[in-house]
Length: 308
Image (cartoon, rainbow, N blue to C red; front, side, top):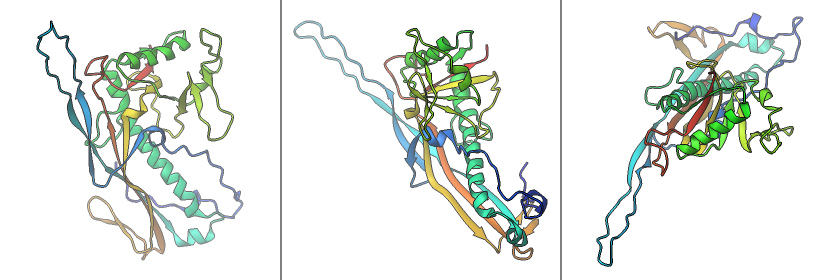
């Protein structure tokens, strides 16, 4: 349900009245989609990208005077539409003055994290997805029968994910996993005895699974069931695109009036001595499924490891 009356309250914000002055918060992992998908700048609301729909073929020529046959490639447009994510955060001026921390500086990264979570839920699972966006990654991979049922041999399961993509004509260039799943990978070894998973001990250096980047989804954007419990996703990131029409845009207002969907005024910043921070982000999402020499036309550039 849409909400229009959420206002930061004094009891929910640290003030120097027997309250610790430091705010402890988790590391913000904004969005695995934004971090990995191919970025496409958008100058308008919609973006069209030609995708190879049919590959040309070649033919043997019979004899010295045989006729050569014709064959032409065909393309289709993959349309990406930018949709808007936004939020308003009203905070009274008196609360800002009395707070022991710089509230607006604390709020900004929390809002970008919320935007990232919303984007990941829509792109990966289809939660609250804009109707102009394509089917989300996990449902689309499932519909294309690109799922691997988990077995007792997790090493073979991960390799099977990569094989599933290869048989469809795509390459597993990266993996996404549920929170904590990387700890199940720590002791796994390949047939040559080498570990298949290499956790990174260096900041800003990614973990590696079979040499490919592995991202643990820690922003709340991972669903435990959809409809089966999903543990790991292998993706061909070059086929997955996000279009940035308007980057994160913060604005601060002291004259804003907030109303509900019926037009009823819920909050008046000027009258109630408050300021309202607004964050707007316009983003598009699309998955290219070009024709390949192997696999069928229904092949999809992602595969998922699910509970048997």
